Length: 262
Image 1 (cartoon, rainbow, N blue to C red):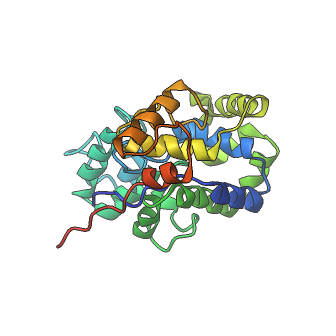
Image 2: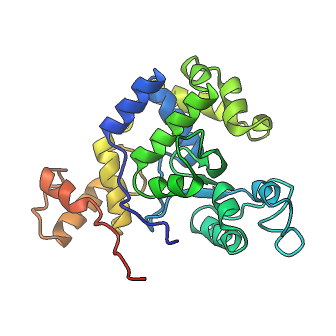
Image 3: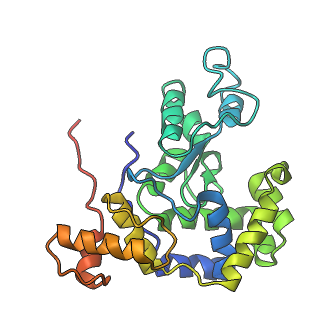
């Protein structure tokens, strides 16, 4: 699997749908996304943001590969190594041993929903979940929504009961990583300042995928984002206005991935 699909950014329709279903304010959702992935569900190479969990792979395979592959099959949580593309190195090593367990041992997308919870996220199997995760952040956020509904975690998120939410979403050892206090701080930040502008954020993601760095994907307009827009417009022969007009946004949307013959 190359894990590359349409790579569509989150839009207002997707966010509004999840907010309505969970009956929560946007800052509650952004707080979780900030802590989980820094608000972005894709890497610059178009693959979903992931984290491979070796202790889950150990459990799902009953430790079958502990002696030969302790770095990816281990009862002790951790040993993640670098974020980003390196997580796919670990995932691909595990897939060579047990593809299904490997996909289930990985957290996916903007909300980092674990593959092993595919059913709770609304999917029939982990392969179908992954197929959706590579397509769009909207699908990633909707899996997050379904998981919260299935596990009744929308209520503590809604009431800002960060400890209860952290225990359910991050696990019983959440306090070791200050997960609850990180959520609280992120919520306060989004409550006291502007929320990400989804159009700007989409442009930032697409600029990043095309190699025009806006120096972050946060939905906030700034000079780096403006410069990236201007450079992109020049590269495709559009007027260099710096505006995210329809022509610019249409040109920014990444093309579908190439289909290779078997």
